[in-house]
Amino acid sequence: MKSKLNRGFENFFYRAFIIVFAMSLLLFFTSKWWLYDDDPIKQTPFNRDIAGLDQTTLVLKKWHYNPDKLLMEVMLETKHTGADQVKPTFAFAAKASQTMDVYPIKIVYQQDNQFVLHIEQVPKDYKVIGVFVKELRDPKILESAARDQLLAEKGSIDKSIELELPKPKEKIVVGDYREIQLDKTLDIKSKLAYQVEFISLEILQLDRQIETLETQQLPLQDEIVASIKNEIVQLESEQVYKTDDEKQAVQQQIAKKKVAIENVREKQKQYEERIQALQQKREKLLEKIEKIQQRE
Image (cartoon, rainbow, N blue to C red; front, side):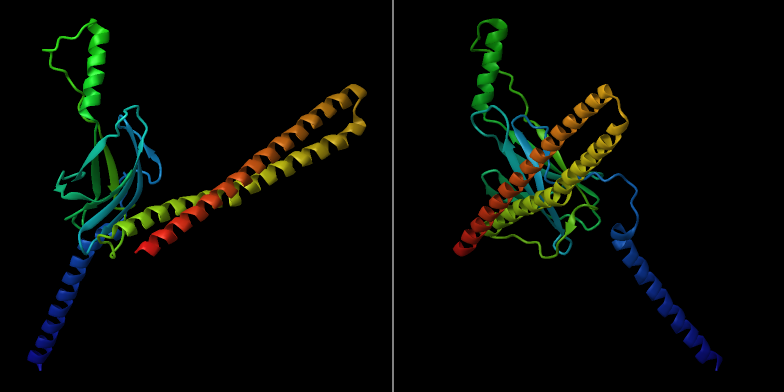
């Protein structure tokens, strides 16, 4: 009897040990997603201008990660904001923030000012990834600018002098695991699919702008008008107890508040016109998507 009890206890002990061990492993490998992390979020903001390069303003559109394929996808837009006649080209690198491990990165889509980058071999326990964007300006433009500077400083140029050209500027776009979206469907897409995705992201931004105007800005103007009207009513009700001079001062205040109402109504009209313009742009983008999909 004791041996059976002992064997039963041992079996129970081993089963409990295996369960606890398995749970510990599970908690260890998934802790990044459920443990509280009080470190400041280092994510570069989405859909905002990113300064730091000489000729270019960057915009981060999207950042997703597929843990099954250890693959990241970063979508960027570039705006040529400098004076160079020739737009710069770009080189990209990807590194882990703390370990400085370097990950393979490649351009899987480029169309005009739009880039889709794939970062490979990113481990599941990553924390912060930096995409290094190096701006490569045209050498002839840099040489011309350097010669002009020498000419302005010295009055003449010695052809034997080796020109000192500026080093390429670099900007780091940062991705924090708390802001990067998990996407197990992430993979390389067709050129047309990426075109549609960029347009869809633009439509999403338009929708957010329209919603802000319709649900916040327009109602706010109505509230402001209602508040000013209440103030006018209050002033008018108090005129009975005012002297002639005081009544004249009150009338001036009322006149100013009526002008203020007109100004608010004008702003409201501008918001309505802005909504209409955004909606028209949205319709055009939807038509563009439809035409692209017909080519697939």
